[in-house]
Image (cartoon, rainbow, N blue to C red; front, side, top):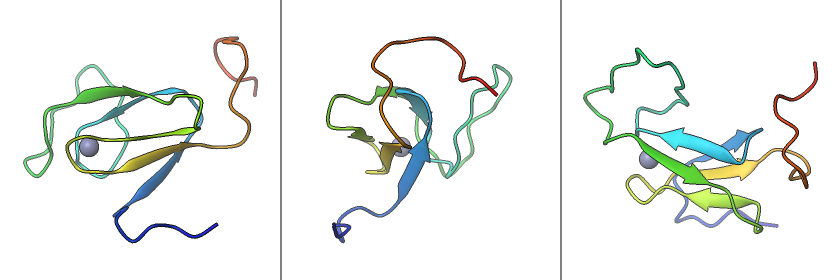
Length: 77
Ligand SMILES: [Zn+2]
């Protein structure tokens, strides 16, 4: 597959629920302050296609590996 040129950035994630604030990184801390260059933090949910695009910065979040069929909580480590 080829990556569309319209996708400025692709981020591989391990969870179906991701948060994006345009700061160029995935943040999950409650005390995190949004960067000046970002956008309001939004939560996105990856659907059956295996990816989701942020409506603000067009960043694409792609599930890394096989999308989990069942929500088993935290990945084992
Ligand atoms: Zn974004």
